[in-house]
Image: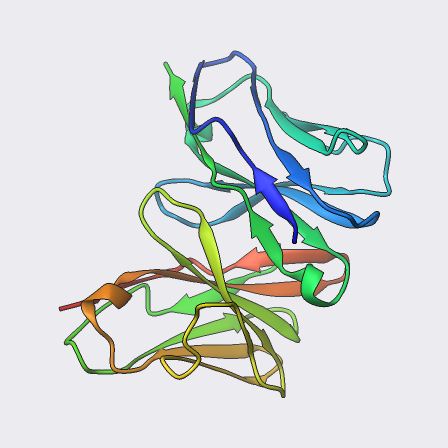
Length: 116
Length: 115
């Protein structure tokens, strides 16, 4: 079974600074998807960024980028120019391509606070 | 982006009653939807996978007779918590799979409180 590990329960960053959230996963599959989701106090899950494992290029969405290391099974999220609105819980997630592996497996999440 | 509507946002019910939660994909057809449960400051726990026109697949430890899932159309899945008890109080979230390109969109969640 796939597992997703987020070992840091909490992190804090100064506004306008950069922060990196760590995530590792375990899988025997070669093709899969990786995601970072944001859950603000409203509890609405928001897709931050998505990476397909067959793509070597790291995904980027404005201030958000990932460092995807397939061999190391590592998928970290970098938030640049942090804003107060970035404060939320962040979940790393894995999804396989087919069958029982196609369900989304979440890490435990990390609470990010942004200091003004 | 695609929109998934979940209703109600919150519900309070008496112990022993049943509660139905609806999840609708408003602008796309979703053959697959997922139901999650989330406790405060914890991760989302997958309860079941709902496939249109077939029986839901439940995760280990989830009582299928207590949490009834129906996915009767390509845009609607429902979760019914039968004979609810206080321990069923939780935040329930649905998500719908969009396959072009493949992305998962979430509803806004339902906070269930059983008295």
